[in-house]
Length: 117
Image 1: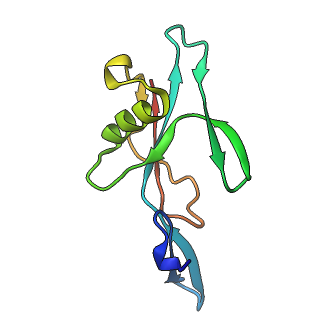
Image 2: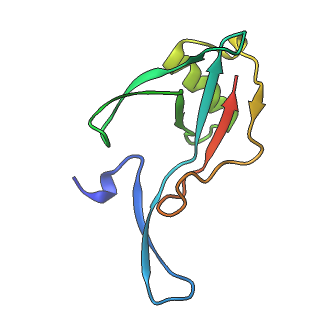
């Protein structure tokens, strides 16, 4: 497989602004993550996902990449439906981040929008 064939990850180089150094990073789409609480706000829903980085399944909150033409909120609705079966009519947004979180700025451009529903 060639690097140019990667679907989600694009490896790029950038010159350091003050040192003669090339920095490598991953140019990746932004994403959402959603903490789904029950009505009493005592339990949360986790999804079982295989992850190649650990070569195992992990329990995670629902999350996903914001695809072309989507907003963070439309991705929230799509990911909830795909990963949990819930629709936007099943939930109430309790919290949404005003700005996306740069979760790993040392090596990726991806930013994460956080929701609690």
